[in-house]
Image (cartoon, rainbow, N blue to C red; front, top):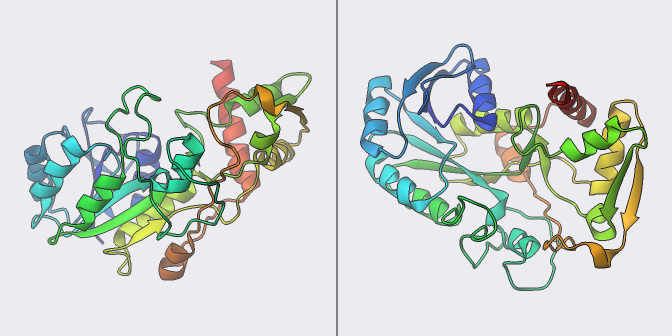
Length: 310
């Protein structure tokens, strides 16, 4: 049993991680600015992560040996925290993202180079241009996981574990990745429109509960310190395949309409797929997703139906 401190454990993924840790029998302290958690069995402390000394005091009071940092987004507040934690906690788990890869930059149009749809292992090339969402997303001017990964792995007195997450979906998803599809399935025509390239595009989508179980396992496993690990689905399907599978999972059908490529206008290069290999994590820890695709899609459908009635 470990004393695990969860920084930012009140959000969509953080709540799921807290539940997974409790289910594994861990002692869990959630640190956030609200001092609240909806997860039974966790302790909660009101702390602003931007204050490294406050985080350190909480670490010492809780005798934490592992910290899982769900909300490391920028260098300005993460590098001082890492400096403060060295020598005070045994293991630091950084929740990173598949957006560190050059393939993701090519998808966004920020990275030069020809389309390369090679499956991405942990040693795949990273983006050469930092801050990929600058000018694209509000509040993400200084967001980048690459320098945070480098800083964490460079801390000599910390066992650092880097977990690169896929695109995460499930009930409570603030991005509501399946909202458009669910809305189409609620309409009489049950039709969804995609461009040809978008219909063929493959991306790594995984249910939040399976992502959380992977994080909970990797955070405590003896084989993970000093390592970088992808977390992703067993298989990657195209957007059109996913839409059809989602409809089948809830006992419905949907019609796909393919629009002209010339009318796309999304700014994204859908020729560039993002396909992750999580073979390393699976080999070292034995982790595998538990939910079937049908179970995952059905949970989202139930949640979206409820949200539509509110």
